[in-house]
Image (cartoon, rainbow, N blue to C red; front, side):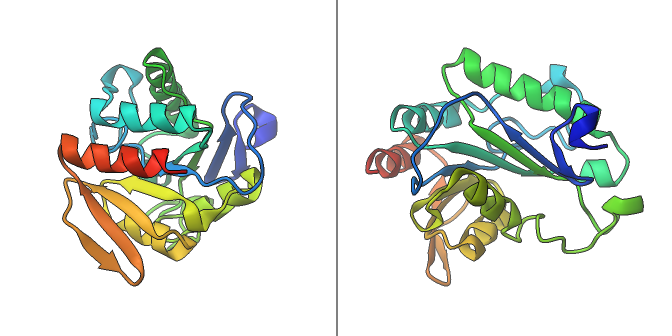
Length: 209
């Protein structure tokens, strides 16, 4: 599979899709979002678009970032591809469904990156600790290179510590962990995202840019 085959694959296990035509000046921060378990309900290796249900808590932060001119970047590990549970074609359909549901709610993502590498995969996707797979920061760094982002001012939201670790390794200083607890990773501050008050805190951070 490759970009020439009609899919935005920068390499066999890396999906990089620019969504829409919004342009951003160099040096803007970004709102990085994990997908499964953060934007949509995690159904365990989702491969059927009909199963996708958005988590409504994430809609206001995405809308706020859109209004503030902050790029919204989805960064998602997809080990199901390496494991052979589904292919990039199925991922494309699920990804399209997520983007469509967001758009119907007036929430727009500007870029999607997905890592299909995993040590338990097969063929060219069977790579352990690939730099693009969270908790490594590769997807965030790649998005920053393509969009000219200021990673130090960017924010990340995810449902796993690997998301927070990826943010810290990429040079971010703040993240929100779905159903998590407040903590620090080096100089990186993790805030919980459990209730409306936590969402308000994230909204305040986005609106402060």
